[in-house]
Image (cartoon, rainbow, N blue to C red):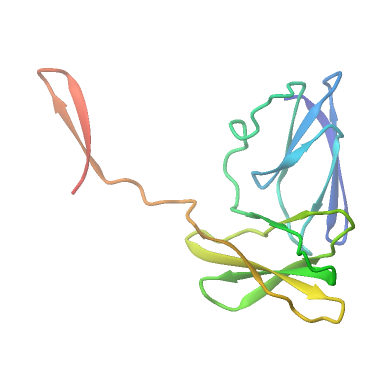
Length: 186
């Protein structure tokens, strides 16, 4: 693509990335955090939330093509992360949502909290790096203004397998047909 310059400003947990593109007209910026697509903008600025002392690779692809396939052109190789999505509670007393993560059946750990805004109906949070070959579960807990927990919303659990075992196979060559046949080893 044609990004010619970038700058990063970090204040606490918030990192703001600004890029410069040599493209003209309407430019679509596709943002990736450690290879996970974070969305598209027509502005060359995007804000990311990272834990204290956490480092991440931010990549942006710029294009003038409104129909650009951001999944087919995603960057290769990245630490696993998951973007969690949920809809707002119908209870009007929600002060904030506490997002928790459980790894391999251990204790629930808080990932953060998000405060609702008027007329906002859906929310998202991207996890930190996830360990390969681990089981994860997530839940979102609405908390009222008195600090009382509401009913937890369980999000889809996932087993992270980024480096699967190589397939075990055999290859045979038939001289008569000059064909190679691959078969799964038993």
